[in-house]
Image (tube, rainbow, N blue to C red):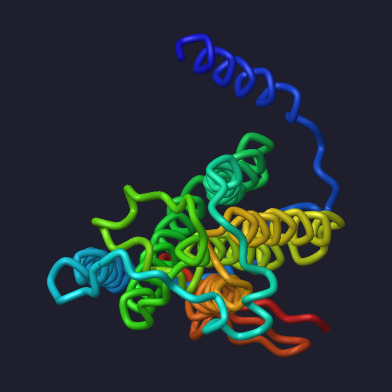
Amino acid sequence: MKKILSTILTTVLISSGLFAVDIPEKEKCIVETEGSPFAFSPIKDGIAVGCLGISTALSVALPHMITMPKYDEFTYDLDDVNPLDRKLARKYNKNLDRAGDFTVAFSYCLAPALYGTQWLCGNFDSKEGIKLAVIYTETILATQTAKCLLKTAFKRKRPYMYFDGFPEDELDNYDFEFSLPSGHTTDSFMNAAFLSYTFCKYYPESDYRVPVIASAYSIATLTAGLRMASGNHFLTDTLAGAALGSAIGFAVPWLHTLGNKISTDKTRITIQPTAIRLSMKL
């Protein structure tokens, strides 16, 4: 572990020196010239984080607060599943399950890694990073609340319950009936949508917009595929997760743009905590 941490630290220090180069104009963050694209209030956003944190905790605890159906060695019939999901259903595969855990964890590293790199390049303000971290936290908490509530509401059995060799350790915590929506897929697509939207807001002229979006959604799609292949989810579970994650990943940062900037083709007003900037194109 010490060697790993040392390697990471060394890489960061070397990278900070290597990245100290002139940045093309179109690759520069717009915060320096136009102000932040996102509105932020320490009080309002603090309250939002607190409320979402409570709702997340309650949604996670809900299955233990209500009566949930318990596994009674009932044999589930795959013929009861719709034809599309039935055809793609798979038995449990532990290795693919762990692979899905890795890809969703990796998706959570994308935004911090990208904006951290931009910060090392001097192309992303630290104060803006704190603001974005709070917005990201709100997005994560909203996603956890929504997916947990839906899982508890639908109580759909996972595909591996229709085959032999299902993980018996998931029976006591009710996880075997939390198939809809796919949580890993929801998280991955939330991260993809959040990163794609915010990056395009901060770097609207960047040539890296398409690679960033493609990479983020490729990882999210891979996660969805692994969740199906491992027997954890049906196709419709992953589709629902992709839709839910993408919606929240876009909606939360988008809501922070409302009321922050009023602009036309020739006039732009940027409202910041310490100043109001007016710019006009003649």
